[in-house]
Amino acid sequence: MTTLQSLDTKLATIDLFKNMTKEKREDLADAIYMSALRSNLPLEDAIAVLKAKNTLPNSFFDGTAGNIFSEISKKYRSLARRLFLKRAGGGTPNAAMGKAELLLLLLNKKTKKPVDGDIEFDNRRIEIKTNGGKLGLGSGKVANAAAVKYCEKKKIGLKLGAVGKAARNQPVFNPMVAPESDELRKEFANVLYAWWEALADEKLPKSIRTWKALRKRFLKKIISNHFATTQSELLVFDSAGNYRFFKDADSFVQYYDRDEARFEYRAYQANPFSLYLDIF
Image 1: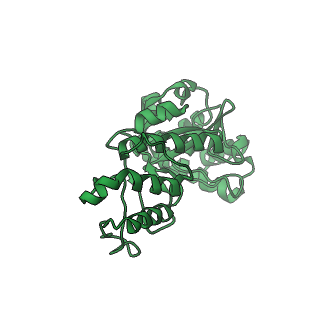
Image 2: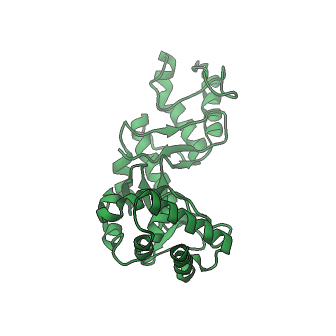
Image 3: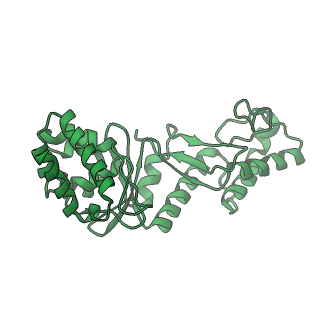
């Protein structure tokens, strides 16, 4: 109990957790305690590394790719793996901490939790995405409706949806799939233009006639929107701690402009057309 009380006291001295209710801070202490116990690490050692200078070194934030656990001393990696998966309530109603955030906030001395957003490091705002988080644009329903309308006008048949309650047996234009008819093949670029204009509220240059060409434009647009809206760098993790750190639009586009990239497209729902932020 004495050591657990020491953990409570340590958390209460950290600016990030000062405004937490006693109940929330005890929940956080319980999570750290169990993480240490399951890692076979003495609780005193776990307390010692909280907000310590070199547990997660500052150099991590200078990197672009790797595995976060390789940045941490072997002695504390098991603890770090467990903290990576923990979520916690923050000091304000809108400051909940998602996966990976708690690890970054506990094991580096210079990280902070802003009023809005994920984390700050040395006055740099960083948004965290884990396990297939997404960035998207527009409305799949609106985009599909524009493409269907164009195809009806030109009497072009479209494949009917096979999944989804709203989309089943309804016409769907999927820009990522090869045209299924000669009529659609001939008009594909024009249907693509109608689809994109409804999705992104902009006209496409006539030089863009394929999904592969449009994919790059889509990636540029969503990452530019992200940087403009959040003023944050983007740090993407998978469940094993592998990461990609995007600090500019070009590196993001170069990384995700590949055939392995996955997209979410719901042609009869208002969800944005989105990229899954996977690590390859």
